View 1 (cartoon, protein in one colour):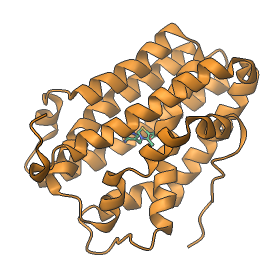
View 2 (cartoon, rainbow, N blue to C red; view 1 turned 90 degrees about the vertical axis):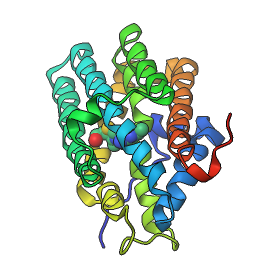
View 3 (cartoon, rainbow, N blue to C red; view 1 turned 90 degrees about the horizontal axis):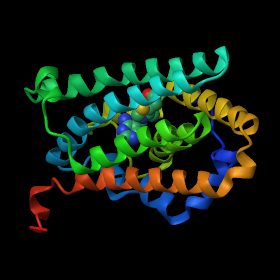
Amino acid sequence: MTMTEIDFSAGLFGKLRAGAGQIWESYVDHEFVRILGTGELPEACFRRFLVQDYLFLKHFARAYGLAVYKSQTVSDIRAANAALQGILQEVPLHVTYCASWGLSEAQMQYEPEANATITYTRYVNDIGNSGDLLDLLVALMPCVAGYAEIGQRLLAAPTTRIEGNPYGSWIENYKGEEYHEMVAASLCKFEDIGQRYGGETRLARLQEIFTTASRLEADFWQMGMDADPRRKTGA
Ligand SMILES: Cc1ncc(C[n+]2csc(CCO)c2C)c(N)n1
């Protein structure tokens, strides 16, 4: 298969990714992702993740709405709007999976938010409210680019199975060409905004935001893992 290989180590993004070090690894190489790839992830974990991710995507769509508002050029508005549309396209995947478990979209909307969902989504929106467009995009990039890196890794891992894997269509979504092109375009726009907003002079604060968002991504996977009925610790 021909795939646009994304260089995740380039530019401002690459600097922030490297700066997040072990925390980035704990996100993109989380146990949840590894056993999702082999198909061994307990269904309870995936369900928990997916219902919460539905609620998460709603807040991320709001965050891109905020990015539209914070934009100062038509080109930046267009890019934020395209990302918002991309999120809305991701939602039906969640709704279809949940429907197969007898859970309707109406029911998903009223599921209580997990602490991990509240923490991550409100953090990103707070960064966006209190900072400028670059701060907000830095908080959003671990989400956007991280899933493409995960898709790329799953594609390369010899242990990954698509056929017969109950999560096969979910994996296909994130390792597909169309998705990777969208991420490549987002990274390109991010680098452009990084330069215009003086990213290099703001590295310490931007690193803090990027590392925190990456940690909250890892916590989001962990929230899914903790739904495994065999692992209940009572903690
Ligand atoms: C916790 C969590 N993190 C990242 C994504 C992936 N994702 C969410 S929005 C978006 C950009 C456009 O689709 C991407 C890639 C997710 N679904 N859930």
